Image (cartoon, rainbow, N blue to C red; front, side):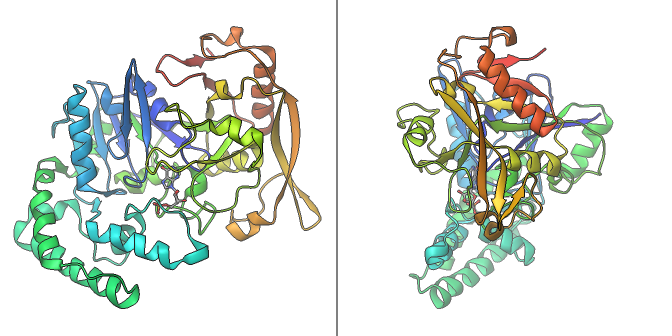
Length: 432
Ligand code: IMP
């Protein structure tokens, strides 16, 4: 059975949570394949708002199985908090409903301390990490000394592995970063005790996924973060430490390269970014305040994970086209169109000026230093005053909205199939 992928086209926070929630109605397995609790996916169902960092947002649908693949780094504490929050809202996450790959790596409190110490030591060159230990956990994975979820199934060696890791981190924290020492023994005891609950969820996910696909189950792969934060294809070094693009589904779930039926690229109708790094179309004026909102509404542009105000700007079609090509995106889901209501003109970037040359496509590896030298070239289209939130059919969209969509499609070469006009589940307009 083919797989579908929902992937972010920008720097994360495109609204993937709500798109995955919507698509989950027609899928049996919803699988995450990268990242950790640095992600923040918000789903609004009626008057309930679910803010999830780790568990796939499709879990809110009772018929689904959620999967955390081997490509993830998992903070057990976050998982516990999400179990509790979901249970309070009537969603029970049993080991039958959530599979955690035995090859997924664990984030420990030591990783978080290290992340924060490393970020502080970067001084002016700070990446703006979420401070959740993501980078250090992936470093340990690559260095082949990480702790995997499957280690929990061997209690004798598990405790020793945790202690060895904490001893090493302690040395790095004190010797290299001059931080206060941790107590590796008590921290390890506590971590081992607190993580016991996980064992019931640990499964050979790769084998289960292969079987599920053979059995014809419908699979939706949910990417975390966005294409421009990808470790290889993003604005390096201002990126996260995992593969955030559609390519990550195979290695991050442990399945062979096979037919992907749709790659749904999710993009906001403007641009946002949290953390540092180049952002050619960034705005600092009244329009920025307008796009960001005050923070009074859950949908205003403040980070789900850290609460930081997001940087905002006009839609960058050069970067969008790049993301479409990197992922092989087959269609676009345009989010937050309602936020643009009230603007006289909508600007969008269709090229860059760089070293006295005009650029309409990225001819660089999205390297941060190169992108910093790109000056955006804007075009504009008339805005609209209508409130889009009550609209539910494509024909009822005001003419300037349709024109803006047409421009995006024309420039990027893929159809926009859905547009969201509000935070709740029903506030989506399907083109068909
Ligand atoms: P890290 O993933 O915590 O190491 O952070 C690296 C960069 O990715 C920082 O700029 C973060 O703000 C950004 N980042 C990580 N996860 C997300 C996300 O889910 N949405 C938006 N930005 C993110």
